[in-house]
Length: 312
Image (cartoon, rainbow, N blue to C red; front, side):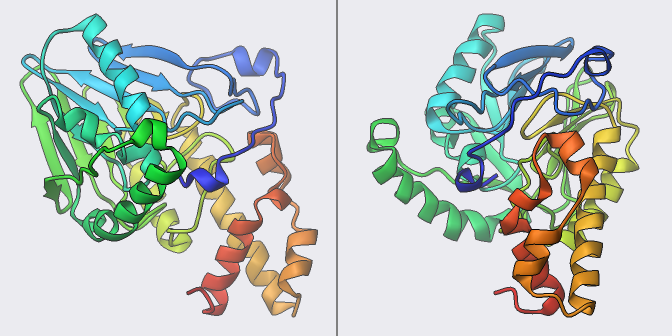
């Protein structure tokens, strides 16, 4: 998720339906001021990150294997430090790998903290060009805007890239890293734990108004969500927002399906982009996220560009 567009969430108080299940996609029940660690299954952890009043980055996870630990998403450098401390409270096994679901800084800039302690960063092959260009550029900008945190740190790109799938399996834990196609970014990949039915989605599926589309292909994103839905998922650990059940995939897909349908209808009706922004009405989106779809102007602009062929 691009930090530029991660500035605000509306805090809603939601009662019984939101509390019915820890893994049900509730409507607007986010706790943006809270960072919380959940053990989803033996040795499988999820850290939901705080987003208000300070955006601290992405959600992360880690899986403890017999002889080592795999971290899911490096986050910013300072958050990587915090996760390393949390892991050390639970195990002294070495952190061997950190998996970047995509190149965005709030998911990958902390790679350096893991490589410093001997870990290897892993990502999909399709993300390599993004790390080599936009990833490097973003890191250098952060060295100026977040000098106290980034200081003299060196940008660490993944050193292992996989085409479509790579598997970690020691007989007890099994983690499959899967690239289904261009979604939030060209190189999005997810971490699938088939034994537990747990899917760490990165920003290919988020729980709330975190949908940055600047690097996306929304038509392909829908296809990627369809592929994710074919997995026998029991729990979703999203890139941002609270834990959810499998129905989160349908909500995420519905947003892009309805957004694209609305924009196409408006184009066919000769409406201007300004009129589209002013008139869009997706009630379910506000019910789900607590944010009016009108406020996601960059997403409307992006889809308009895709459908008119004017997207740069």
